Figure 1 (tube, rainbow, N blue to C red):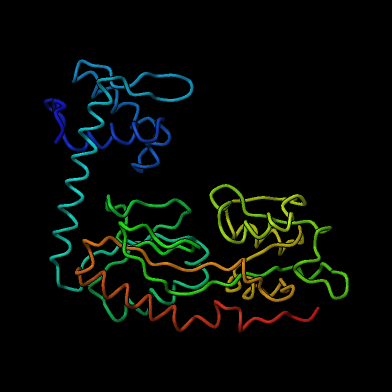
Figure 2 (cartoon, rainbow, N blue to C red):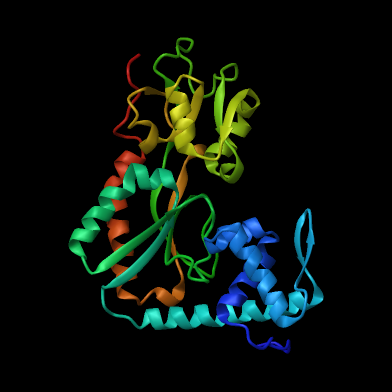
Amino acid sequence: MNNAAIPPGLAWDDYRFILAVGRAGSLNGAAKRLAVSHPTVFRRINAIERALGARLFERAREGYTPTPTGEEVIAVAAEIETRIGATERRLAGLDARPTGKVRLTTVEPLLQGLLVPLLARFRQAHPGIVLEVVTDNALHDLGRREADLALRPGSKPPPDTLIGRKLARLAAAVYRPRSLRLPRGAGPDDLAQMDWLIPDGSLGDIAMAHWLRRKQYDRRAVLSANSLLALRDAAVQGMGLVMLPCYLGDAERHLVRVGDPPPSAASDLWLLSHPDLRRTERIRVFADALCKGFAALQPRLDGAFGPARPA
């Protein structure tokens, strides 16, 4: 621990609320991190400050800013969290039984398009393991045990603090609604005059988004969204062209692939875990099952089973 005094009478749950507000800088952000309501965070922080007889945060329209006292308490809370997380990981690493809970975080298109059959087969083979899946675009902190495993597309290797296994290569292609006609012979490089549906927000850094910006197709965007499923559904409704992972676009009968998948729009699929959990049997067997399952799916991920449909 550092030299900051530990406030008397605070439970770890109190520290969690203080730390969440300090990291998020707002009650709404803290509520989302803690999976509680905004009023709950508001009441809890006020009660903690009354109990301590000290103000931990300055309130402003822009958010909550820690006072000097608040900064000290946040620093203590962060160190406590680090120690608790390290202890939990070490204890989990000693568990050699394939039983218990495994928490997986991934993105929703993978869950809807590919994962569910793999999860069902895994449960049949390992009924003692309970699976908990969280789908969003946020990067959950594996060091703080927000998840045990993360299944994420990406073009960069994982950080040195995590163990990364490359499971597959995800091809992506341009798709048009079946009702939308293109000039004869038009391919992915010839679509600058068309309306486009593009990823935005938390998806702005994926390989597909970079490809669209390099082609300057983003200048013709009529819709942007931070959900590939929403973009796919908008394309089905005839709103414009869209770039999607092949496993997602090829499966939609109302869409037609335009040309071959551009190599620079592809991304790798990584399975990430914390080194402290590498000997945990339930996590090891689940990770191995995902590796085997995605290896079998590689032709579909390459787009090999979904050539362009006839108009």
